[in-house]
Amino acid sequence: MKTFTFRIGGVHPDENKITAEVATKVAALPKQAIIPLSQHIGAPAKAVVKKGDKVKAGTLIAEAGGFVSAPIFSSVSGTVAKVDMAVDASGYRKPAVFIDVEGDEWEESIDRSDKLERLSDHPELTPEEIVNRVRANGVVGMGGACFPTSIKLTPPPTAKAEWVIINGVECEPYITADYRLMMEHADEILEGVEILMKAVKVDKGFIGIEDNKPKAIELFNQKVKFHPNIKVVPLAKKYPQGGEKQLVDAVVRRQVPAPPAIPVNVGAVVQNVGTAFAVYEAVMKNKPLFERYVTVTGKKLANPGNFIVRMGTPMKQLIEACGGLPEGDNKILAGGPMMGKALPTVDVPVVKGTNSVTILTDDDAKRKEPNPCIRCAKCVSACPMGLEPFLLATLSAHKDWERDEKEDIVSCIECGSCQFTCPAHRPLLDNIRTGKQTVMGIIRARAAEAAAAKKAAEEKAAQAAK
Ligand code: SF4
Ligand code: SF4
Image (tube, rainbow, N blue to C red):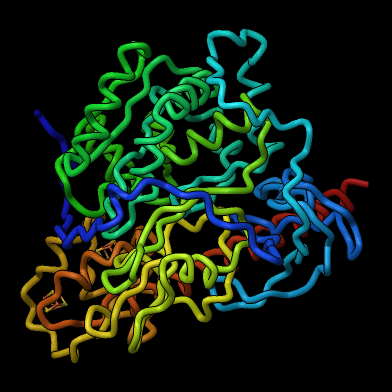
């Protein structure tokens, strides 16, 4: 099998995909769903329900809070207990709708049948109608970034989409949610790809799958015989191949320039397999995004597995379904060991961006004592963005934000490859993350200041003209 991969940097962490062959189960409904209003990049959604309101699964509970935002739907049926603050996976308290669960009634407008709907049978679905349905049903990127999908499907007039590239890579160790989705819903995903291609008016789609998933490659190669415009691209396993820019390079050999450039500037609209599935459900079944595939994993868990989970289900409940927390100290992550974030508490709810709950034992998670940098440049060779991680980390530690910006810290995709490879165990990613956040804050403030100055000048000119 001929394989492809991205050309700059990359590392090979242990896979630990211990749940790959564990068929997905439907997670039990929570007693109370806690549904955060900020589950996407952009403005938080605005609640449209109040205490005492009755809702069903699929009822709109919060409308989009701006252009870059997404509506939120109830994942359960029951009664709104309150709209209040709740701690989410970031550790911050943010507005959320609390719903006491009663039964499991769904909105009648949702098609709950298993019948596969083919795009070719629905000529009424114009690109505009597709984008409207995707927006109205709250679909966001399911690979973790959670950018509202409808916006990605309406590229700026200066960019021309040439291909849809589907990310079936799942390069993060431990996580198998996308793999299970691919094995269990290949037909729906392929219809989702057709829908995405129609939305952005292209006639070529690719699905990138790493060669550590031979069954998925075989299955999709069989299925694409009925989708002549879609091609499976087998990729040589390398982390972080699931990064948008790395995937574009691996599949179509184009390099996406530094921010603010995005993949569509080189012709690629990149979507995750989970997003393709959510788009299929939104467009063909009128189903809002209120549940998703989640892996709950860890070597010491009694019964790790994959689950279909309603948004708002506390992660604690999923861990209990896998046999409970193992004895001893554990580090619990939302996401995998490379890019995941440590959870402040297991009471935080599953949201649109939750692909995994990973429980590392203290031995797995323990950081080794950092030593002085030996200038080996391994971090530079590993960086998939062509950055100099040792320099960015040092500049951040010294709060030299100006040079951090000059050295392009905002291009860092926070993949952790540098830290993973460092023989001196330097906390590179921690420092770079802090630096990147600070520099992005400075850039945003500068842009806001420039916009305010421009507006003031325009108002002054208008006054003078009167
Ligand atoms: S975390 Fe950032 S600096 Fe480190 S390897 Fe990844 S992209 Fe490069
Ligand atoms: S890999 Fe670690 S020791 Fe080597 S240059 Fe980078 S920071 Fe220094």
